[in-house]
Length: 136
Ligand code: SF4
Ligand code: FES
Image (cartoon, rainbow, N blue to C red; front, side):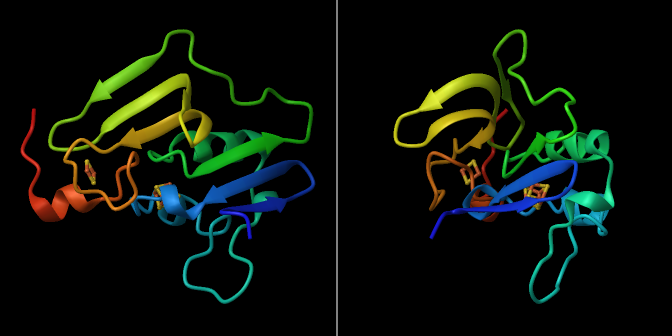
């Protein structure tokens, strides 16, 4: 079975990769009609939002677990003009770049573990908060 859940709406397609989710909950808190929390069965509803809104939701997902494809002819997610690596205080490295990670394929956004304790390396899985990562 694929690690990526894919839901096709009429105007947008949403992909969700659970193993990259760091449970920041932006998605379910910002648009509980699109990402419905705590339900049995289908919880992703692309057509509850416009394609622009779906794109904005995906881009606000800090882990890159949510990706989208527009089916309305609008612009797809594209790499940033310059590759960006943000060093976030007491938190993972935030990559926004056109990169390919060995064994993980191409990606545009990802939080990379820098505490060394993630069970899902190279991605952060939130363990840094439990181990008290203290790094500027
Ligand atoms: S990391 Fe992304 S998919 Fe996971 S809860 Fe946060 S916004 Fe949702
Ligand atoms: S930085 Fe988040 S688990 Fe390591």
